[in-house]
Image (cartoon, rainbow, N blue to C red; front, side, top):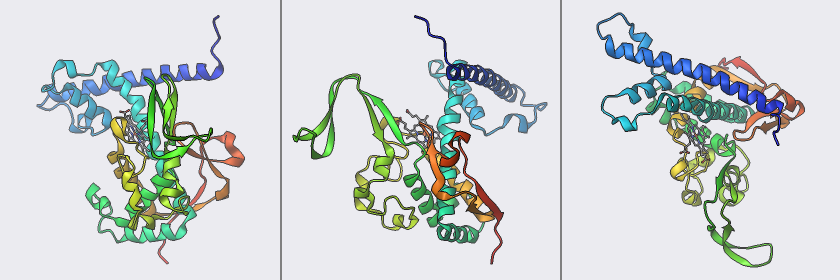
Length: 307
Ligand code: HEM
């Protein structure tokens, strides 16, 4: 039986066609620019046209490098397939993380002001990645925000074969039997909750659901057992499929917060209790009372004027 696609499926298909058209144009233009840069060393092409340090230009240049074997080169189709990854895996996650960090700072004006004082004491307006990494309270704020408001809430896996997932401690199942692992059957889907671990009171203590950047001055010893790729948490996952962009993302987040919080103050323009999260893969802020309006986080944003 042939089923007519519903409205949502139609919208998604149309969006794919548009993304493909724009992506193809982008790849074609960037590739042509790189070719011009390679062929025309003697002028004619301005440096600014071709020396872009954006992700796509770098990928195309790396892919055209003469010192990689042809069988390791991506086809244009494969280069194109990276664009949705940059957008969803790379852009939306970090922008959502920045929104939640500002949410946490608006809920905690003392932490916001303490952070601002550290940032205003920095010797530069345009810090390097190393200078950003050396700011201790900024580091604590970003860690705490990425723990409490991890933008990706869970991961999905499918079992390729019957197996047993070992648990750290024995537990009693619903039949009253003690188990040392959880049995999964071939084809079962497994949800791994990032938020459950990041919010566990057993690990983080009774104040696990509070935003307290100071906890990172002496974090719980047990967290060193958590197999996350960053910060002893699962925010960026762990193992062979861990996030490839975590260093970039943390540096980007710090740069954003540095610039915004030095210059501006953030205060809620809605009831903070009304804020909830929506979305499947990324948890974006929205208002419970206006959930149909989609993602939003209303703030009063004012220039910072020292008292
Ligand atoms: C705050 C920002 C980010 C968060 C919270 C985040 C989180 C995650 C998580 C939890 C995974 C594992 C998903 C799974 O195993 O099912 C993942 C994978 C991935 N991330 Fe990120 N990510 C962020 C930023 C980025 C950035 C900036 C990039 C690229 C520029 C990126 C690229 C990827 C890619 C390509 C994968 C798949 C890796 C693989 O399966 O081998 N992410 N990310």
